[in-house]
Image (cartoon, rainbow, N blue to C red):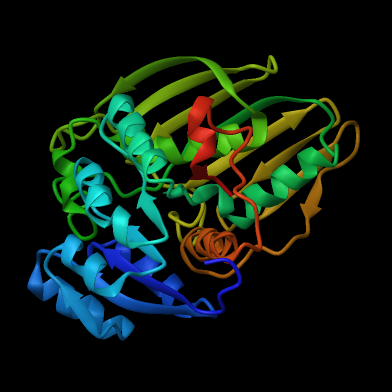
Length: 331
């Protein structure tokens, strides 16, 4: 794929979140959406029409064989990922796979081993770290604006989890997930913590279920101990909202503290910086578009395209342990 001007992308999955992937692929320059696969014919037809995709399929293997795309984007539930990746791997250049990569760490390792054996890159679509506010925070950390970082905390308050109708208008399967808050949601913030603070050495968790209509946990605390000696706190409750016109834009608020100052993230994507012993003021930066997570999906997929063309490195190095670094791109 190195040096190619046009990248041909085929997608597996036409559910709720897949539309954000499809919109980004459609809008990226030098990308053609050539195929879409889903087992639900109504949903498949709707998404294909919305995004101008001419070729639709009921199974992934047939789509990959017929189209031989440069990139296959898998946006189905985690339990389906390994089988689908095996079906398409021999007929594409690389695979993008939605988080969570698999239902268990052992199966995630098996997926990575499958891709390594085929010498094909695997991209974990963990997009929150591509949000403009986290990229700006990481830049400030690299440049030393906060000094030595020692604490990060995030308070998750999307406000979408109360009552019997919780999640039904968007992703109704959330109600049946046996593992919910960490597996589905906190995974994003664990990744952004690692993106900013480095590797985690220990985790303490206390989880609970506040909404009785769902199967899994929807509230809890995660305490992180980083290899650097820094600490982190994830405080998650999906029932309450925070101050924002769209509570799901940032999904909550962050404090990032270092020896030289404190950076705070608020619900509109605004950052406030207080250098030590200096008054706090708003930190000006490009907050990105008003789309999901400040355009995080588009930014991740733009990086994937640059990698596929040989224009950007696989930026995984210090954020994934062991051999996972060889095959997962991480932004």
